[in-house]
Length: 303
Image (cartoon, rainbow, N blue to C red; front, side, top):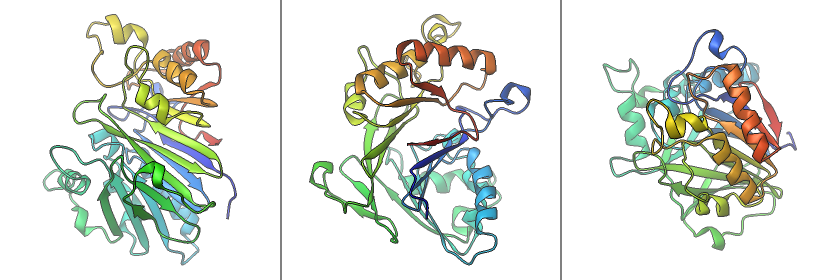
């Protein structure tokens, strides 16, 4: 069992997947990040990137009879964060147990949103037809997920400052951000062995920075942050993007700087941005926060 805290990027785009040469180097799949900590498999979002992750898990489990147990955390249920799940091959295995968590909105629960996205005639397969065991729950700011060694996930309905998990446990806490239409997103912090990762996609900074996010991400080892738009697109493009629920590289870097994180990873790239623009955006972030890197499909980092 690996003793490392690993992060692997399977989908880094926002809005919709991008085929062809435009995405040749950075990748064109939508949001999906794999995290391995203490032997646990944690999946952040289920955009089209989760399809390739599923194929990799097929190879990993092909010659074993092991039960696949995964914790899938949805930031929200907009299409680009769920559209890959019906094609995630482990969801069809009878030996898969999928613990799935996401935000409750004014409209529906996470389970209701997933079920609705897989209803005929839009989908040939319904959620309940998948052979895996699926435990689907809403998760709120007052709750935390504790993953203990050798155990399935357990949800504790306690305030974060009241939780004292076992020393070796993986702890997942939640911040609800309302800086994305409509009804906001969940931002997740994953902690293990005094290391921490914050996943903050589909969020838009405020003047002076999002103070709640800055507190939540304080001194994290890695911050994965939305950086969809260039400064020009955000402020003065043909259709200015202010209020659309996404950030610029400068915004992401400002949050990283104020939160005193160790590393910033720019995420949720606009589907219209090719390699040249994305390289410029990476440079813009580095001008503010030098330890910034662009998320690319296949990129593997150690927290």
